[in-house]
Each structure stands twice: as structure tokens, then as C-alpha cells.
Image (cartoon, rainbow over all chains, first blue to last red; front, side, top):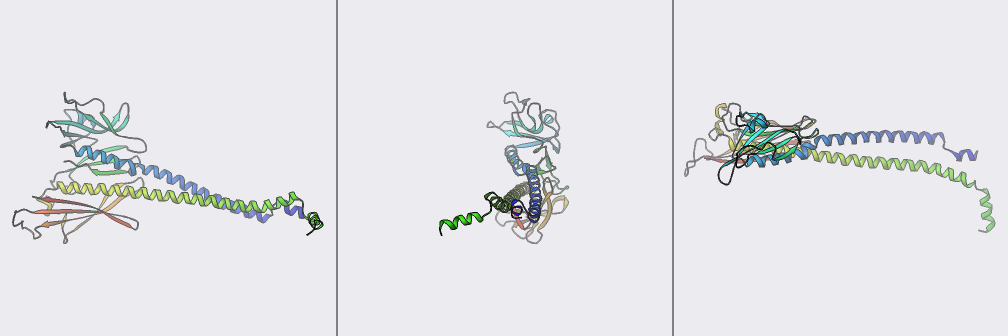
Length: 189
Length: 170
């Protein structure tokens, strides 16, 4: 009798252990699931928290140095001599004043590049020929499946009032990959 | 206590293996419970840290979005046709109401997160110098305005405002 009692667990002990284990296991699984969800959410919000403000700062500094700007539907249209300016599009042409008072044209556009993929690219004109470079001079930001997915430039004269004839503001909208967006005004001198 | 007493006690005790097993049985239950509770405590701490990080990330997003919208307000205030500031131009609706009689309040969408849109309230007002309508500065004959926009954002109990002030003169 004595040996039997000391050799194993009683039914109450086992029930208690199993009950506590089940409770703790379910709580842990719930918390693990919450962890995964939080990590997924954090990854989705990463573009707005880190990338978008930084891209905004870069673009504002670049566009803010321009004397004038025009918006085009695409980067190709902006680089073309016959491209027609539009009120909204994925590219903007900038007039940058040089030290000798001449202008150098710069195109900032969101487009797909053959070698480096989708992103925001900057094209400069050659100082001697005045022709745009066929390849981007530099990449401002790269797009990916979990960050930047589109950029829209808009000459927005309608935000305050559609009937007012005040000068418009260049609004830039950076779209993320999860229906998220971040909008800012690219200041002009 | 003599040697005989000790020997006698040893004889009466249960076998060492059985005694060890019984003790192990009781302790293992305690160990298991303590381990599980420790595990839960660690998991809870981790979850709390993640929630705090996520809230900080949201706060940071709201800060940059309100900053960006205040920048848009500044850009509009700098470009708005001077003669339309009081009258509102062809629309006839002045967007910066004269302070303090006609301060305007507008709800605006300042951004969109993966889960919801972010809205803020924009309060616009202007201060005129000279303050009396249809008057000009007696010395220079000019009129000047201080256009103010307050982008007010509320996140739960927290409420904060970003201010854009633009001075326009002619």
C-alpha cells in the first residue's frame, strides 16, 4: 500500500496538472498568434513609419531647389521634347538654375528600369548636348512588394477651392503596397 | 543520540528509491507550474513590448503625416492669391477666416495606413494688419496678413497640433 502510493501520481494530481497545462498551452498559443499578427502588422506599417518620410524629405529637397516644374504622365514623356505637361502623373520635370544662370533639366520619375526594377529615378541632361541620359543618373528610392508601389505627382489647385485661381501646389503621393499612402507638398522656391 | 538510535531509525525508513520517487513526484508538479508561469510571464512581457513598439510606430506615422499636412498648408498659404485671402476669390468662401470671428474648422484626410484612414482637423484663421476691414497701414499704405493653420490630430486620449504660420504682405 505504501509503495503504491509513493510510486506514481494520484488522479487528482494528474487532473490538476493536465488542467493547468491545457490552460497554459492555450494561453501560450494565443500569445504566439498575437505575436505573429503584431509582427505582420509592423512589417506592413514599416513603409509609412520609415521609408515614406525619408523619401518625402529627399524629394522635397530635390524639387525645392528647382526654379520651375511641370508634371508629365510618364518619365518617357517628361524626357521627350514633345511631351505634354499634365495636371497629374508619375514624373516631374524640374528646371535647375546653374551658376552661369542657364537651366539644367532634371526629371524625377517613378518607373520600371530594365536592370534595377521599379523605383524613383532621377535623369539629368548632359551639360554640353542638353540631352537626357538614357539611363537613370541615380535612384532615389526602390520599390518592392512590401514598400513603395507607386508615386503620383499632382498640380493641385483644387484642394482649397475648385473655383479659385490661386497658384497650385505640387502634391506628391507615395503609395505603399497595402493600400496605404503618404502625401506631402514638394516646396518650390 | 547514540549509534543504536540512528541504526534503528534507518531500519524503519522506506527504501531510498521509493522515497526519492515520491519526492520527485511532488516537486515535479511544482517545477512544472513554476516553469509554465515563468513562460507565460516572459511571453506576456514580450507581447507588452511589441504592443508598446507598435504604438510608438503608429505615433511616429501620425507625427510625419501631420507634419506633411502642415507643410501642405504652408505651401497653400504661400501661394494663395493675395487679394483673395479675405474674399475667397471667385468662390466667395474665405478659407482662412478672420480671427477670432470667423475661424474655419475642416476635417481632412491626411493619409491612409494599411488598416484605416488617418484624419485630422484643420483650423484656419488669419490676423490682419491693420485690423479694421478696408483699411491700410497709415504709413506704408499696405495690408499684411498672418495666415495660421492648425492641424489637430487626436489619438485616443492624446491630442496634439501642428502649426503652420505664413506671413503675407503686399
